[in-house]
Image (cartoon, rainbow, N blue to C red; front, side):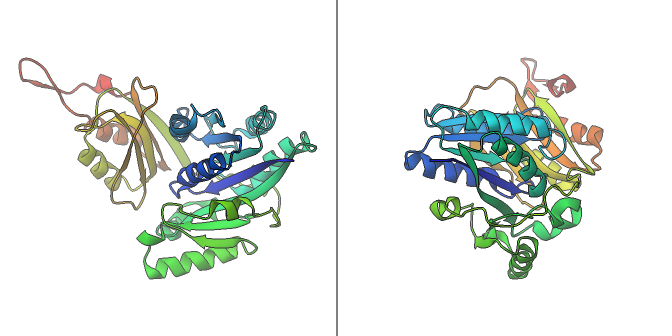
Length: 325
């Protein structure tokens, strides 16, 4: 039986990692041996760490992080090597590739196909899955030049977060999905609740134009901040709402008033930051921010002000910029 390689793409914060979580649980429940390749723009890998925290101890799941750039533009050779390594892992029958939120499917597929060519007798391409944020994609499309091609070749498109979308946005995104991926099955979902078996059983039949030569990260940049003290959630929420140039914020930090480190997730247009307990190994926290034309020094100043204040025995409040790098 051939090893099947599935690809999941979607803009920043669309719900790819949540979908991957559900697919992995389904596959493990079916007795499958699963290998993940998780691509992250930042040097520190939030999604890979979260998936490893959940599944890394499981003998049916292998997690391989691919951090420090986008597989479209910066890590093409690394992508080929990572997929090849997971295909060759003993006992594996399913590989799931989660791309960074700025990756376009045609360019990703060119790298995946190169890995498959070297493993043609043992592996094949499975379903190519795109995730759209039904509430926020109209605005995201205006900000992201690659939006018009990033689902080219998708077999399934999931309209996620439909519970947060207005009726008008829901109709617009449905119509746009049909235009971007005319051959794909389109599924509406809340928190990526989908029929995992049906999605994974969808064969790759959609035609794509190959590598379109589009730099999907044009205009975007990311910065990783090490955070040594707990953050105040209300201040951090106010900060990301004010900085309209920020599209995505995520990280693993201590949060004032919460027990243990937390995975934090926020996307432009969201009202609140989502927290999830992190139970993996933890030293210093970190935050990854991605956006367009961001004034990073100004954002860093704002992030410094979000740190919980350190109280000393004299009852004087000390705020130390050295706690943020």
